[in-house]
Amino acid sequence: MERAMQFIGNLRRAAVKADNIPYTVLGILAFVSLASRMILILK
Amino acid sequence: MSAGPNPIGRLGTVARGCFWAVFAYWLAYALVAPVTNVDSQMYNLSRIELALRGGLFNNGLFTSVFQLMWPWGFDAVHLPFIELGWGYALPSLACLGGTCAVVFLMTRERLGADAAWVALVALLALPCLVYQATSTKNDIPILLAGAVWIYARRRWRREGRASHVFWMVLSIGFMAGSKTTGLAYGAVLALATLWEVRAWPVLLRRTAAGLAASFVLLGSLETYVESYRVFRHPFGPPATVRQLRNPDGIRGGMANLSRYVAGSVYLGQTPIGASAPNWLERSEAALLARAGLFNAGEDPRFSDRTLRFSQSGLEELSGFGPVGTLAMATVLASCVFWRPRSPWWRLSVAALAGLVIVSLCVAYSGWANRYLIPWYALATTALVWALWEGDSVPRRLARWGFLAAAAASAAAAPMVSFNRGPSALVASVTRREEMETCNYPLIGKVRERLRELRAASPGSNVYYVACDDSPVLPILEDPRLDAVVVTPQEFARLLSSGRVAAGDLEIEDFDTHSPRLTRIDRVTAPDAFAGRGLRSQEIFRVGVPDPQGGR
Image 1: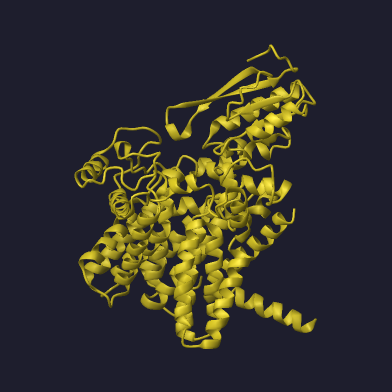
Image 2 (image 1 turned 60 degrees about the vertical axis):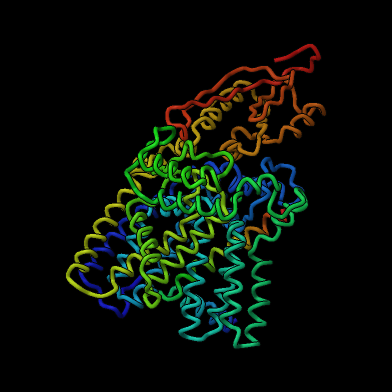
């Protein structure tokens, strides 16, 4: 649990770093796209 | 974004203020604007609404081939916003924001913070780009994915960490899933990615596997499968696909490139709808005729006889403004000057290559500008980089002059648009339904009239017999109508099976010629695309079965 929280914390810190903003934007859109498509396909 | 290690000067400070002011406006617009785009109402988002009711595969609720044949990776991103009812344009604005971040970081690294902020203002000065960034169409994710690929490649080369290759691979999958043209660009970038890692066999194998996984997970594979099942072709009905492709090979490509170059010249705003051709449009048509390229490469629905380079403020019919003209001039300059060591020149040549690919592959149409946004963004960045090559008093003056022009264009972009200015921003909150149908007012009027008729006869159902080009979303999502949107074949089946009852209401975009329908009203509204034109739609009431009856 502690390691998972640490991983999430590291991920959050990396995501908001200025150098990683392009990756964060693409990652969020790709994740939402995948999740939404799964929901729609499985309807 | 912070200013970073490079000190920011006065030019950069002014540009930063301009950028954030304009970007904040667009953010406010993206938060409140409803789905105004007609394509989205026809298929991009209406199919999400329909898939929510019946899934993707074997869904009999789909009413348009376009709801089936295009990849839907980016359309699906709008699902949470459809549920929420607000913020529909946020995914597109996020694409612009991500692209701006790439341009900022790469420009600052090379040329400093001043150039980086000026480059961002220049991007916001491209009307077609910002209109797409505040829309629900799926052209701008191609730009974001391409920008992230370039950025990740730069960092991979600089830092040598495999995590950057992961982002290159992810961007390719996202690009392929967003739009059919993204599949073509993605194939080229996939080969380039494999070439980048060719010296590391283990990484090469993992990258190849990653590309396959990325396509399966993000590439909208399911829409290609469903399209093949329905049309026997993964890209849709072959006749429709042919209509959208350049039909004349290299001749068509040359003609299209010539139209794009001529269309980049900004001569001021043009009215929406029919108008007399200006000297530029007449000259381009005459040039094409003289070169034997008249109508070459065009979508069959268009002709050089009615060639228009629209700058109307409507998202489908807008070019790239004065900064776009300068960006195209930069691209043309790269054909004249040989500067392979200059970064601006390499960006320009890449933009030119993109324009050539679009010209060769896609048929020319009146709304083709949105296919060009990645290449205009690249060319605009090249223009800014060219301004920063060397340092002299005239060059510094030119930078200030360019910033003034770009800032004015960026501020003007919402003002010259009939549905993106401050009054539209207010209307998005106060007169939301009217704003939703501002591009196609007829459907709004029909919706209002149907509500009145349904309220007068409770229990009656509303049927909308739709064709490929029907803007079904405003009717579909209205809980007061609870309308059934059907194809003509499905409606005929429902009629014959007795599921459609006497007293039910019907509107149709495809003449069903059913003798059981009696016209009870005719609704007329302005046609936003035709300027002064009008459109009308009839509302029918279903009668009892009567073999002698008729309309």
